[in-house]
Image 1 (spheres, rainbow, N blue to C red):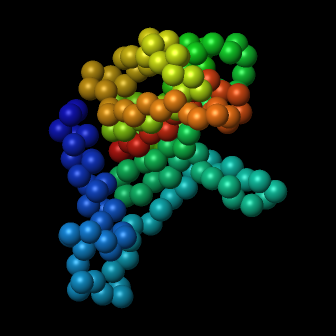
Image 2 (image 1 turned 120 degrees about the horizontal axis):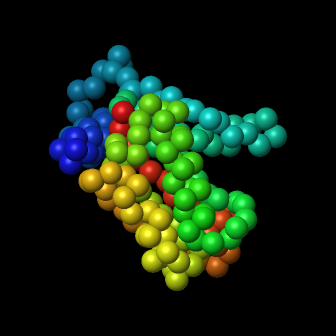
Length: 157
């Protein structure tokens, strides 16, 4: 599993270099016929009938899941973390992946004091080889929509 995640991250980085044309590995001999992998969006949220953001986006074999929050009572970190992780899993399944194929998670906490409580619910949800993770306590104003926690992730198919 760890080797698969490492390989997926390498492919992601190499595809990003190829898509942007920047970096040490960019080729100056690219022709006009070369094209970047096509991006596929899923579960598009609209505002006034204008696309705002996608629930997930696929690029090659990589899946990028938008931030998921819990905007309901009860307002406890345990309940919100459970809701958010279930929403991430649901979005991953829709995109053709799973929690075990997640390589990166970003956690946004409304209050850093909830770190331990979030971890209690988070642990074990990604299988034996958990992904890398960054946890951030948000600044004044908090996580959007009254959620105590929001998470996004990157996975592979």
